[in-house]
Amino acid sequence: MTKNLLTLTILLLSISCTITTTKKEREKTIREFKERIKKYDPSFVDHFPSNLNTNDNISFIERSAQTFGETSIFLSLYDADSTVVSKLKDKLTRNAIANYHPNDSSLLVLNRFTDTKNLLSIRSARKSPEMIWLIDSVDYKNKYPVPNFFFSRYSTPKTISRLPADFRLYVIDAKPGRFWENKYLSNGKFMPEKWKNGYSKGIAIDQTNRNIIYWFAIW
Image (cartoon, rainbow, N blue to C red; front, top):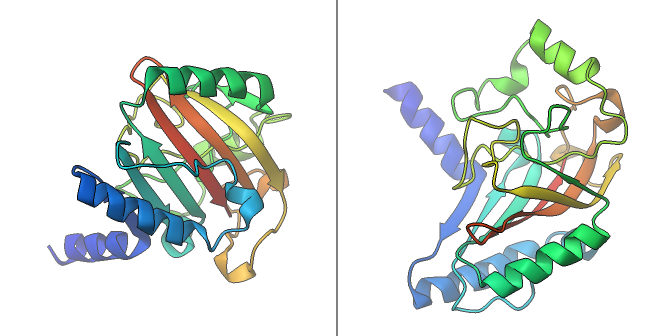
């Protein structure tokens, strides 16, 4: 029981998550999201929508580097207007530097071994033969990192990225290197040598169910 309580406490401290149901809650969520996003360099988050309104069904999650080995923020729009989704998908198809299926066999997933069960121990875990093979032996040439969506409202164990197969992942920009203060960065233990540190930003779209996830992650 004590272990479970500790896990819950750390999760609450490490994740900021707001899900809206009423107009008043949506107003609060929009204000909080706009405030939180100010701490990031504008070039990292300029793909997030600036015209959110109280008619949008939205939620956002912000992950802390202390627990997750990354700092990241996700904004989800669900049951979005079909025209908005279609236009955004068309734009991303033309302009994204890469797009992936959530279960591509050589998908480069940031902190891919993390899930809700091993969250407190993964950063200190010894690499297993499977981990070593996935980190060092899979050909990730010309691949860009995408997030591990294990904590999203859509999470599924059926794909490598933990997003349902109806989604498509569009990477807008990603670069290897150290782009933030060292105290916020990962040791890169579970990433290929080229991507020990870096950032990734993009948008995931499920056109069938009209769901959109904007992401930015730095590690």
